[in-house]
Structure formats: structure tokens, C-alpha cells
Length: 375
Image (cartoon, rainbow, N blue to C red; front, side, top):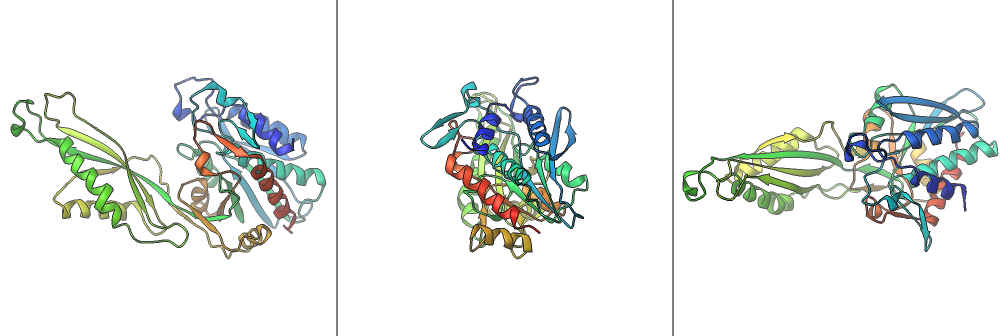
């Protein structure tokens, strides 16, 4: 068993479910156990350890490998420590079968945590640290909900020449990802007795027409294309309206997940959707349903450190992913960011989440190889 696999098994056994997905005071909530564990492990490896308090009982953990000389550049290894909830306690018991490590967070993103932390520890133990580059492991909280960890790190004045954000990319170096825009749509009608529907106005019927329009005609006309990300998408995730069968519903709400491309903004998307609805004689109130802005990412692949990583990985061109992550938040804060990690997003959040042992070890080995190239 490699150090990365051993670490991943230990991390899976430490529940770190984002509190947003659990009842109050649930013992599985929060990243505290994982952050404390990593802080102890980092100190044992001779790394400088810092804790950044973000939310009550929830802190980013920073482990720093300093160069022997003056710091001329800084590199961040930035995976997130939180996971989504589990349907069974068995998901917090790591299990190995057929070359796969199973358990909540194995893929998203404790596999990245283990690979990045193991790579930094190997570098520290081997005594071959870069002469002028500071390497910082930044274990971030709250990625699965509101990205409070990455927002605090960026807002706190952290500066770096590059951040490698840990997510399951199938070992591909990613320089672009889509943004995540959640919109709440509301239609208003007029209540009436169910026996006299002509006296009212059915808000659910109006919303049904809107949902059908957005999922069909509007979705098909989203043809603008990004070379790494393809086209924007829309998904209606929920619809709620009415109270009982014999009352004409006076209101209805629905939730839309609109994935955005670089160059698209919330105002431009809302204007586009409103114009599309008006064109078809429909109307709904559109409001944001996210507490914080989640823009797309597009990092210049020609940046020297990005080129160096691509060359180390023998990857001819960068990749793009459909999902949103902390990379965008760090980039908005002035830190050029890319995404990299073992595993496949197809296994993330699944009831039987897993990561391939070979993928985990390949990620750690590639990171060590890259970090050794740093001056």
C-alpha cells in the first residue's frame, strides 16, 4: 500500500460532510477532523502549518514547504476537504476491491487531497525542495456548497503564481470550466374553486409551458461554442406549485441550473431568457438562487507554469470540464488557476463512490515529477 492510498483510506474514515447537507449538530458534519488530521501529518513531515478560520468550527488548513532561499514564486495545491452526504454509514468505511478504493469522498475530492498531500510529503522527505519556489498545500472547506474556503483564501490576500485545484479530471490538466448560475422562476396566477377553473388563472399551467419552452427551444438555441467547453446548458431541477387539487394554483416556482461559458454573465443570461419568454408570450419573475457568484474559469494555457505542467504530463493541449469548482473563485481573486486530479467525475456523489488505485498513484507521481521541475 502506497502512502497516498493509506492516506486516502484514513481520510474516508473521517467523515467531513458539508453541514449544508445535514441536520444541525450531526456528528458527521464539518471538515474539522480531516483538517486536524492533516495538520498533525504535515507537522510530522516538517512542513509549516497554518490554520485559517473561515466559519465557526471550520478552517482551511495550510501546509507550507518553504525553499531554502528567498521566495520568488508560490504554487498552491488546493483540493477541498468537504464531501456530500452519504446514504449509509458504510460509505465512511474504506473498502478495496478490484483495484478500486471505495468510500464517500474517494473520488470527490479526498483522492486529490491524498495525491497532493502525499506528493508534497515525498518532496519534503526526499530533501529535494525547489530553491526559490514555495509550495503550499491548501485544504479548503465548503466547496460543495458556497465555496467559503476558497473565497476566504482569495479575500485574505493570498497570492500565488498558480493554483492547482484538486478535482477528479481523469489526470487531465484543465484550464477552463463552466460557471454555475441558479435561477428561480416564479409565475403568478389567480386562485379559484376547482369546479370553476375559468374564474382563476393557473400558475402551474403557465410554469409548465415555460419549462417545456426552456428545455426544448431555448436549450436548442444555445449554440455558442467554446473550444474546450462546448455549449451552455440548462436544466430545470424542480417545480413546486399549488396546494390541493380543488384550488386553482395562484403561484408556482421552478429552479433552473444554467451552465455558463466564459463571457456570459448573470445579467446577460437573465436578459436572454426573459427575451425568449416574451417572444413566446410567457412571463416569469427571474431571480438568482445562489448566495454567491459562481463564474466560469478560463486560464491562459500559455502561462509558464501551466506550460511546464503540461510538458511534464506530456499533454499536448489543456482540457475543459462542465462542472464548477474552487478554481474559478481563486482566479477571480487574482490567482491563475487550473484543475487536476485523479478519478472521474462520473463517480462523484454516487452511492458507491470509488477511485482507481492506479489513478491515485499516477496523480501523486506526476505531481512529484512536476514539483521537482520547479526552480
